Image 1 (tube, rainbow, N blue to C red):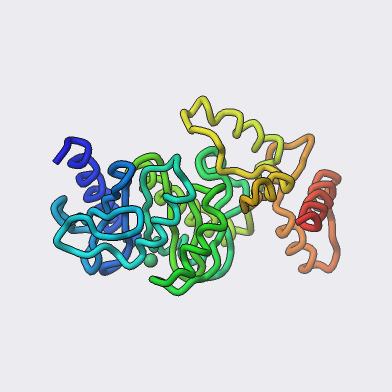
Image 2 (spheres, rainbow, N blue to C red):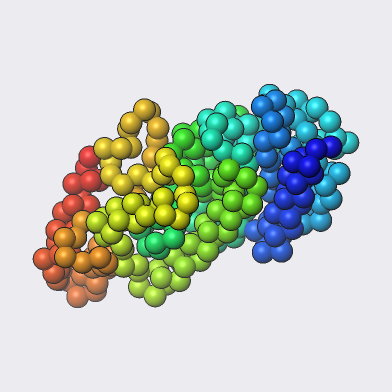
Length: 284
Ligand SMILES: [Zn+2]
């Protein structure tokens, strides 16, 4: 076994341990895979807790999902991984888990598409929800295919989340970022709603990606006109226009306030943000 293969197996074991330790998976849930070379992938075995794997448990498969070596069988979710590799020649690893807060958003049908945190904007952009597909069938790869060309991470409706990256640990860290973002979004919504980062600021943050060593193309869709390009489905980030402010009050929050006293009071900035949002929604 080559040093590279040993390292990949060790990374998968470590990522599985962290997924389980953070309760991103229960029982035998979740799966991880990584490219070994142009013909082979290494992936986690099915019917095993991913928190207690050893390197020898891994399964080597080809890009059609056929087992090449290993005593165990690969996960039934392997076709979703294969679909991601087929659509993303630039990535080297895929992580799938059921982190409870992100999965809560996926169950509620609420995508994590609001421009709220700088580090999420620079790493993941917006996080869409792939439509529900019965696990272990062709429906799930089909649903994931729609968004994967533009997004490194997404929620899976009534199921969980999936992320990809150049290597196992970077794909794993994106899963952490999604769950952390879901937690913060939930708390902000419980406290009355998010202030959104303005479009101008989002564009500035996007410009800083190079500085953070995040490769292009950015899995971020700054405006609706980008969404249809090359048939790539891209979930647009909710970042209202505001020429004067970097943070803009969430419009839905202003409307919530309005329903309380029966009167809508908006500042000029909020009104223009509302109109810009409405125009963008109409264009979609
Ligand atoms: Zn799953």
